[in-house]
Image (cartoon, rainbow, N blue to C red; front, side, top):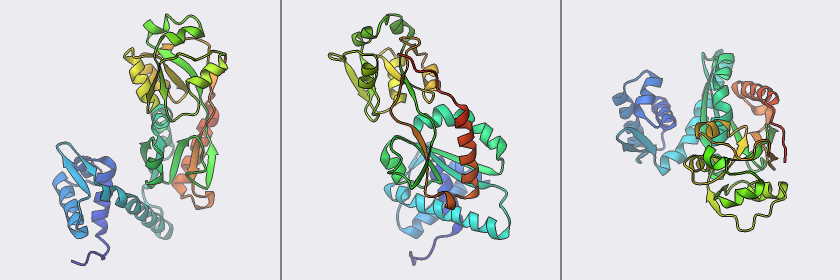
Amino acid sequence: MDRTRIPSLNWLRVFEAAARTESFARAAAELNMSPPAVSQQVKALESHLGMALFTRQPHAVRLTEAGRAYLPSVQMSLVSLETSTAGLFGRAREERLYVQAVHIFAQGVLAPLFTDFTARHPDIALHLTTGNAVEDFTHAFSDLKIIFGAPSAFGRAHDRLIGELLYPVATPEIAARIKAPADLLAHPLLEVATHRAGWPHVFESLRLLGAGARVVMVDSTVMAAALAGHGAGIALARAPASDPIVRAQGLVPCLPGVAVPGLEYYHLIYPDPGTLRRPARAFRSWLMERMAEMELPSAQG
């Protein structure tokens, strides 16, 4: 078989849905197909390419390295075809929009607002994915990205969204023992390695010497909150994005009324305002409106 020939469009549609949902069953439900039919379409594409795109597991599928490399090009091609078709022959019933966001923002800010966007724009199918590492954002296709920190590495244009306020949180039992900032040092302090603003920044703002502090490094605020919820130490809340995970873990402020402004902001990233598709423009306008309504709690120290 000539493997340079462009694969069947239907194979590509099925591959994209299965890759995005990480499930042949969920892809089948989305595409009004049966799971065996999805599996057959994927096998046909893999046979055409001469390479496996998924590893099969009992209740899920995972992309292989080849599959991960192929997915962004497939998504970009499908979006381009959809946009061209809608522009030439009338708007499609539903336009897809791909948004990728850092996990804590997606969970803490976008998830509570998700139904508001879909209610306002029922003709846009919003596909939201998450990431944490830089590589997650540089090797994946999306119309829009929401990142935390320096935006210049991710796109030519960006909008500042919101910042953050830091304050220590712990289980109610541990928080009850914290009467003054110096009492924090008697407990393990959970620190997120990727953030510029962490415990040293909080210590400086509170005029507290952190010498002798027992610091436990973790890779995300979600993990820090989970550990704090099990009594492993004191985490830093990052309001407002961390509010749901703080509540879910049963954490409370250690020093009520004390909050320190962070050093960085969340940004909405895109290639160029002039090249944004209609769904992306609608999402950008909606998000900027909602972020303007979201006020950070007052910073105190």
